[in-house]
Amino acid sequence: MTELPLSGITVVSLEQAVAAPFATRQLADLGARVIKVERPEGGDFARRYDTTVHGESSYFVWLNRSKESLTLDVKSAEGLNILDQLLGQADVFMQNLAPGAADRLGLGTQALTERFPTLIPCTVSGYGTSGPWAERKAYDLLVQCQTGLVSLTGNEHGSARVGVSIADIAAGMYAYSGILTALYTRATTGVVRAVEVSLFEALAEWMSQPAYYTRFAGTQPPRIGTQHATIAPYGAYLTADGKDVLFSVQNEREWAALCEQVLARPDLVHAPRFATGSDRVTHRAELNAIVAERFSRSDSTDLMELLDAAGIANAGVNTVEDFLTHPVLDARERWQDVAIPGGVMVPALLPPVDLANTEPRMDAVPAVGEHTEKILAELGHSVAETGSLRARRVV
Image 1: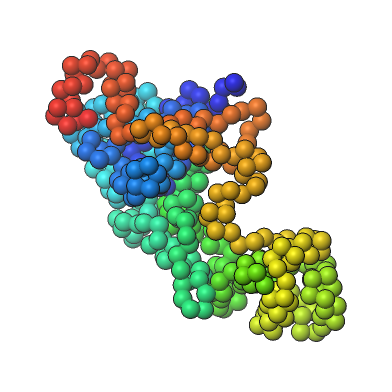
Image 2: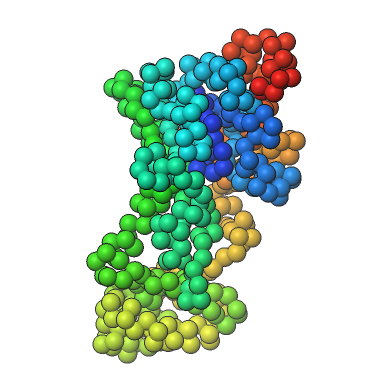
């Protein structure tokens, strides 16, 4: 097996919840050794978000495979000393503690840079480490609200949160790419650069298109469910067998094909009220009524075949259960079993980036403190010393 790209890189992470663990799990996928520092009593609170995966949290199982778990009371002098021993041998330090907590522990970026000049510190915060909201706590849905995302999601009956932790995921992705960039810079120039990402600014970047639209149109895109705010027809329509089929018309060729081959209404191709994309958005209600009536007369399978033949992108609106058995995932062998605490094997998706001739690391999800003795032994602590630390709840 080819050596993984980040083999030899060590990441120490004071992480919790979603954003930071998502970033470090992707580093682990690429071969980095990720030492996850957890509280001696209970560990990462994300372990207790739910118990649906054979007693383990679905969030934790998703975010923490291939890591080593070390329990450590970093509020104690002995615990901080052990953490310093680890950081002296590490390449990256990740933390997403509560606002100000890292600085109070002497683990802020400036303090770490002075003590460990080759270490790359990465901070994931809610609203940034400076500015008027630096001390505010932030969770995913709060950030969805603050960026305006919730005001775009839902339908005419009300707003809705995005159904996954999108602010956390965005921040985790930017932290991951920032760390990779910092590692590359250090390797090629010797310069060490700290990394900082906030949930708010990560999701703010993803809000740029509706932000431009609102700034220059004078009104924000409407909240219209599965419809697209600036393209029509683009959305899901109910078919005769009770299933929704979503399709998108992106250009004039597709509009003509839809009218002629699917709607059987060639007269609509050049109708003035539908002549351009903007015209179709303006007359969306009338257009939707025409499409809905046509879809109500055919089964979903027949309509998708017609749309395929017309060269128009389309998809059935799947449930999560449908997704779990998706033929693309099965045919491309994207599921691979990983172990969770207790030794039970559960399916996990392979990382979405395929590197030629490289198999990603897909090791077990650790139990709380599973690797504490091993890691302390590597640092020179005897079995008796480790036992004493455990008795005093330092580890």
